Amino acid sequence: MMAIVGIAVGFVFALAVLVLSVVSFPLLLDRDVGVGTAISTSIEVVRKNPGPMVLWGLIIAAASCSARSRCCSAWPSCSLSLATRPGISIGRVLPR
Image (tube, rainbow, N blue to C red; front, side, top):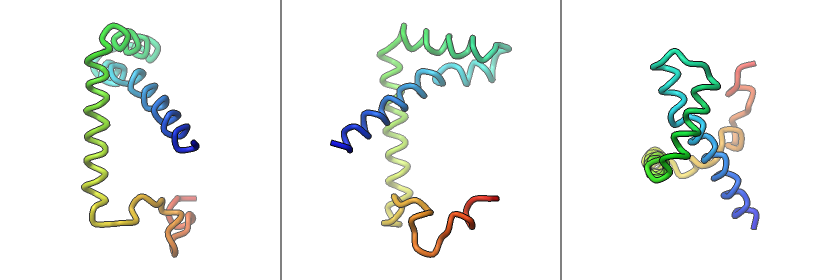
């Protein structure tokens, strides 16, 4: 049950990031607009074009999974964080 809840929460966060950033980041880089305008434009574009935005989200998800599987195929313990590996402490990984 916890896995299902975790996947659902992760999906909601990923969806929020997609909706807020799919147009706003390129718009902020290309045009002289404010953050509020960019975010509201991004939300409006996703609202008016749900099909292409779902397809774009699936493409990004597939590319992320593909890159992770390629990077991790030679290292079986790659799904563990650095903090959980023996011999590696957080103090040596993160700057103080």
